[in-house]
Length: 265
Image 1 (tube, rainbow, N blue to C red):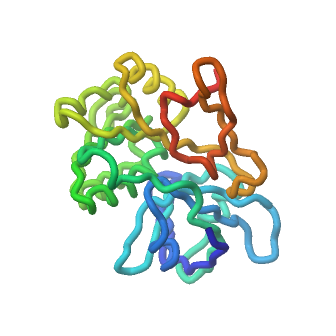
Image 2: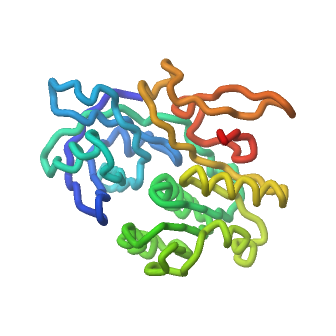
């Protein structure tokens, strides 16, 4: 991990209240793996409000141009500030943070299940997996069609995918968790990775547990330091049959075995 500054090459509106920011950073491009993220300072130079940096998954990497991107939803002061930045502005950030996911040691078929903005880390995982010759099937669910533009990225990468939306205006009408076993119609066996809102992950955990199927989940939590020092992003992870440990999403994760995560009721 390093404290870095990079020039913003673009900060385009990707959908209603959603932006894709591209940043020049040879270091991030060279050293970032699947599942890792960066912490962005969301205030001008010399301003300390908001004080804490904001974590964002690395959405994409363009090795040829030493450019990486983040996808973000404008929700508060930090992301509102980010949305005002443009080409030529300098971004202050740290990274890469979190542990890399080892794709090389896994199966050749990957089933990715994403919900809403949780597709961000799965996008980079798709690209890296395809680069290793792996077969990818993406199942993604959304409340509406705000992320419609992302479908073009999937097509350009050559990812097999199915999109589900609650309002039926994008892809198939329905919920992605109703189709999590459809992957077996495509691959006899596969590694599963998922990311999305907690209600979706709870359903996914329950359904996979019933079939004794393992999956890796990318967790997203509010963070302070992003380096494991403050313990502000801890989650409960099972320890044995009736105990648990607190694990730091920023340092021990963000990838965990879905079956071992204890979600608060």
